[in-house]
Length: 358
Image 1 (spheres, helix red, strand yellow):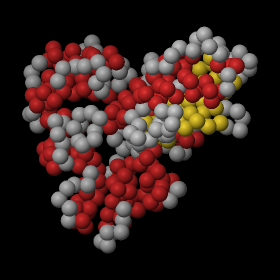
Image 2: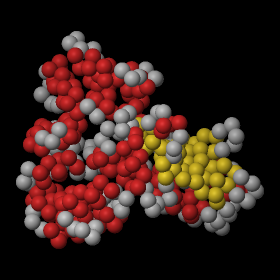
Image 3: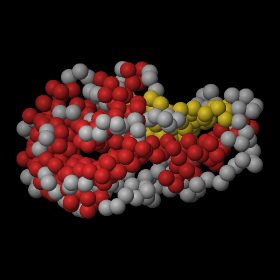
């Protein structure tokens, strides 16, 4: 956590890049999930970029995994005030941008952030979330707080979209598709046809990763499985090319037994796929739906303060399946106390527990 700068130079009287470098960058450097070894001489990750616009606005950009991009800018308003803008470029939704807005919008309440409505969302289906602060001298602690809140939001959106909006494409996935198909490929109305042509390619020239990402973004889950099968047929490899994505495809198709079998083929260990930051939501759900709720509870363990929010969501389902309605209700209550705007879960809990006062 950065040291308070309350008694040092006022933000409106210092260089914007200096201000961001002193207040914001240390928080990003400490909390971002950045690759090891890519650090400059100053100890700051090379992934964190400071720049300046022509109008004098100072900016800092940083990636969150390969899914989102954080942007924080400093613009001086006058000698005593400055505006700090916080933005989270949360991903691309090729087919379900309205659904994303309806689900994520309420989720942001009652926090400081909101969805930005504009051309990027309306025509490009690219979701940006943010807020602004008009700061005065002594407000650096508030800027630090908002920065930490923005980072937490990025973390939470990764697990939330993995459960409810799996078709989201992160910036890394988008960049990969554009590198294979061209810069304007995602504006092409013939994307389903391009996907089908790639799957039917018998010469093995079509890029498997690009096809998987395209099928994911379009929400065409049967095609995800077709691409995985195509890759195994062409390469002859025993290992599946995308077991976690394949497991999710089987979940969307309602085949819980196949979720478990593909997860286990994909070397899932103690509920986690290799390099995953948390337990697999679809694997946990499949355990519950196939009568292995006790195993799901074992993997989840006791509730911990820093765990992903969906753990209590899964605990609630598992405890209900295990015949513990009170424990289930307590887990759901903890989840909804933190995420009161998760309307889909609220509805599901109402139906599951048949509690009229929820």
